[in-house]
Image 1: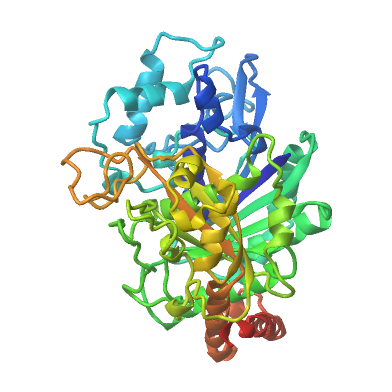
Image 2: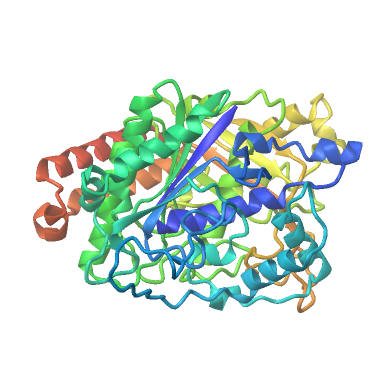
Amino acid sequence: MSIITVQCGNYANYVGAHFWNIQESDFEYQKLSGIEQAVNTTNHDVLYREGVTFSRQTTYTPRLVAIDLKGSLGTLPELGDLYGGPGLPKSGVQSWYGDVDIVKAEPVRKNRFLQDLMDEEGGDEDLIEGEKDRDTIAERKVNKNKEEHYKLDEEVNHWSDYLYSRFHPKSILVADSFQHNNTTHPFDMYGLGTTVWNDTHQELGDQIEDRVRFFAEECDELQGFHLMADLHNGFSGVASRLNTMLVDDYSAKSVVNFPVGKPVLQEYNFNSCSAYLANSTLLISSLLEDGLVTPLSLAQDWFPLQTRTNQISSLQYNPDLDYHTSCILASTIDTATLAYRQQNSLTRMPDVVYGLPVGDKKLASLSVSLPLHLTETNNFETDLFTKLSPLLPTSNKSLNNSPSSSARSPNLLTLRGVLKTALFKHRNREYSSLSTPEEYFEYCASQQLNSIPRIYCHAKPLRTLKPYPEFFNPEVSQEGQVESKPRQQGEQVQVVPLLTSWSTGSEAGASVQLLATRCKKLNFGKLPRLLDSGVEEQEWSEAVEKILATAEAYQDLDQ
């Protein structure tokens, strides 16, 4: 029942850092009572593997391959810190008789959050199976000092600056051909990614293939892959080749693609905005050949416009901070995929990959209600499922689960942090004929949405203590409830309920139709960097045709 996760690109790793933090915040280190066991049903073995260090200490690390550029890791060693790091050569050991000069680069300084984790780990005397457990220590510190205030909004410069998960030495792979944030030699075009993949000198493609195989060969039952990849830069080309490799080498397995895009650019001009659109077009058209494609971004348009980002009620996120925006995407991915990451779950990844698409409608959308706003007036039965924020570019918000559309599409709804028996018990009299909570939930959803709903409920809410961003509006209580009384200053939201919608319906249709409109107007001749990166006009034309054909498949949603 295992899943291998591949993170391809710097922004994808920002999303991944939050995703793994969320996983580990869900771990339980003490024996649970019967009620707690019923609530905590996540099977962490789906995403994690058990291993042993050189000192024979047991480890539990994500089944992950994370790819990024040189200079992007911050304080995180490329080999991780579980198995020790490379040291300086001893002064008495030389491989030749000449003079040896040791040049030390100024190390990246840890921010206060990471420093506190390190200090607590070093000073804690408790041992767990002979090893100091970093995650338990971090949880103790957070619970002990809930008022501790870290300025992560100001201090996060790398995705490792808020990461407390530990990775296997084979998880992190750095592409040395390009430097992170290098403006004179940027890794900004799709063709650069495909070139790096095939580079015989660096052999990036072979290295990725070897690392994926390492994790795959130790799986007893591999369901498939999560692929989170930057869609707006050169990693779009790497992700395209990577997806092809997964489909060819693991043809019997499922692939769920999450292309992720930053909502803002460092600068806005025709070249930068066109590159975003062109890279997105080439990657998505490639991914649509196989699997399920679910693009995620808080941008309002595939051709980015300054200050045009999707707003989410109850959140005051800063669109300029990758630390903020990536957290919203990670929280949504984590919640939406819970259905096939549970103990004794009847739902598997292939059920989603082949259940959501209808015909050529392989592009899906994810929408979220963060936090879920339940009221005392039973809005569950009236409008709860219509107040979702789409996490992808779309110009037609009226298609947001509009009941007026004629076509009905499958929809996987995930309720998190909600006791379904309590809601069912307090249903209105007109719903008394419905005999089970599942039947009641699906009926309410079908009345509000133009979809064929399947609902999964997870009783445990999302934990939002540090290093989760403090971007909730004051009216969100510490328990994640939207109330009229504002939260006290200094109080942090601890848990929140969520609702996600995963569908190939109207929102996905509006988004791919917008992408088709934009890319059709883009003149290949006016994109010299795309041509110079190795993309030929024929390849571009075929990509545009694929997007146009996919958009046509969604036209029945407008009728």
